Amino acid sequence: MTIENANLLLLSSSRVGETEYLHHAFELIKAKLNGITELLFVPYAGVTMSYDEYTTKVQSALSHIGVKVTGIHQHEDPVKAMNTAQAVAVGGGNTFHLLHQLYQHKLIQPIQRKVASGMPYIGWSAGSNIAGLSIRTTNDMPIIEPESFNALQLVNFQLNPHYTDHNPPGHNGETRAQRLAEFMVLNVETPIIAIVEGTGLDIKQNKMKIVSGIEGASSEADGFLFKAGDKTRIRVDEPLDHLL
Image 1 (cartoon, rainbow, N blue to C red):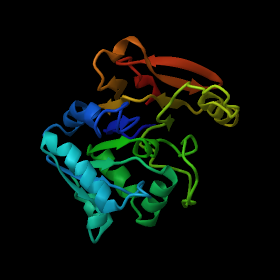
Image 2 (image 1 turned 135 degrees about the vertical axis):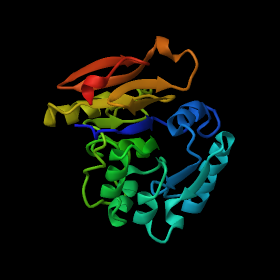
Image 3 (image 1 turned 30 degrees about the vertical axis):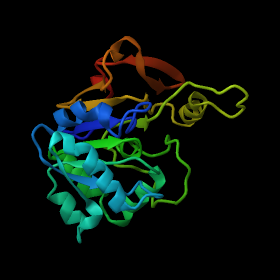
Image 4 (image 1 turned 90 degrees about the vertical axis):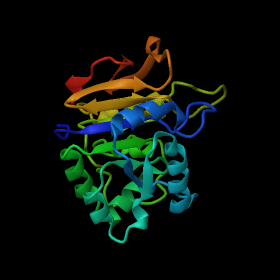
């Protein structure tokens, strides 16, 4: 069961095509924060970029909507910082490294408690991936072994950001759909929501739908539901409350 009172925005990506960082999601983020002006950022998915650089990058992007961003790594006590946060954002990068750091800093339960209290949670890419039951449907390489593959479990399904059906000519490896099919064979009853670039899941007051920051995106499939061997199209604004 999804955490009651969850107020989540789970974006597939930080960019769409050549757009500026988080630009496509400005209005979605602004609406989710709903007047909140201070945001705690979790940069732990960053590996090739320092946490300071990552936090500055997010601050620069979100300054357009009047939000002050601080990195959780800048606080002496990460748990206290989470417990007192008005809202939290978790960025993309390597999902395994992100989850490893959350376990190392004992942040799993504090995040769950804050989300249960109604605190807005915004994630993109890896930051969205960890909102699900586990990270077993991530696209990332396991560069480090976290304490567990179990994730934040803010929702009662798996996520697969950056979903694409693209298969380059001459590529003989498995497609994304084939990889997710492998998961379904071993986890028949567990749903996977695959979200594509430019879209995200908006969850509030026990209601869920796919949203898009791209104007006119509602005419095409903007996500897919994988469950029990089936792949079903999901469109922007289609009610998905039954999956919560």
